Length: 116
Image 1 (spheres, rainbow, N blue to C red):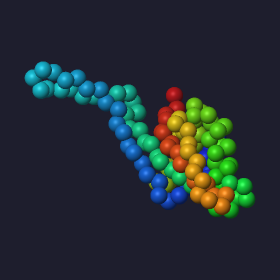
Image 2 (cartoon, rainbow, N blue to C red):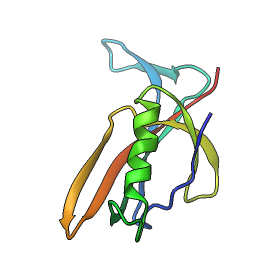
Image 3 (cartoon, rainbow, N blue to C red):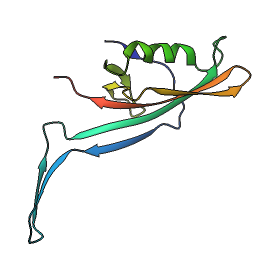
Image 4 (cartoon, one colour):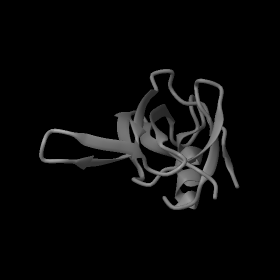
């Protein structure tokens, strides 16, 4: 399993979702329970900018090659800004935007996954 050890911008953000089951009854009563053993899931939005070919700034080309190798279905390790190393997948792919003079910005969402 590979490690995503590239630097990312400080402006990363996290979405936390909970997985729950819910049954609603006609009188306004409902029952809820956690769905599975891993009911909390993180999704991190990351970005990095740098020159595509000469390596100045963040290594955007190497980052895109890493994500290409994972193909959206392979898990990789990444240390979050909170200092926790967890498993993630980049299921939705990534986007590249050209910022001029050979500089690009890579943006992606890393979805937390759990080992079986």
